[in-house]
Figure 1 (cartoon, rainbow, N blue to C red):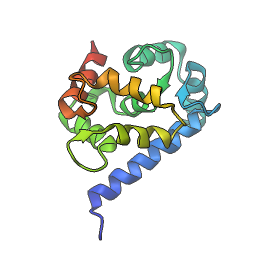
Figure 2: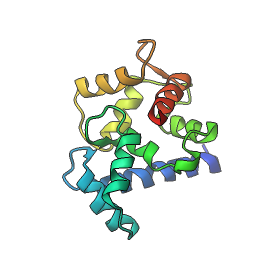
Figure 3: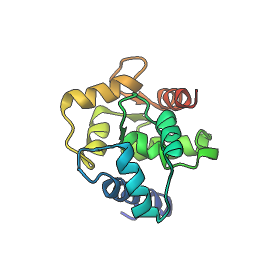
Figure 4: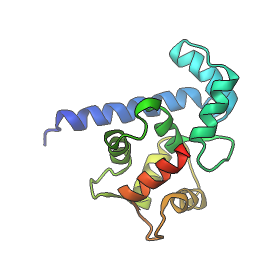
Length: 154
């Protein structure tokens, strides 16, 4: 089976994001601290980022207010701020998690995506899904995904 150029690019983009996340996550805990963001930004992009920019980033991206940026939050943070909530960007981010193209992000897809970065417990995975799964059906629809992304902007 041949892969389409679009899926090829999506796979490369996923790999690239995972590689960057791992480069930032120096202690390997699957979450980025403010210090890791600062150090990683310089290491990966060769540019410094000031504390004010870091605070603004965490304010916008740390959805669960944990004080850390997890992988799903990181995916959102890597999108251009100007186009962060465009339909096209949201669909691209959603598709990164919806690996079987079912139109929903299942618990298994969340688990698979997260385990590429860090070994999360079942409770942690359930908590992440619970934060986004507005109707409680155990899956994340594109509409639910859009809602949580829009809430980040507020």
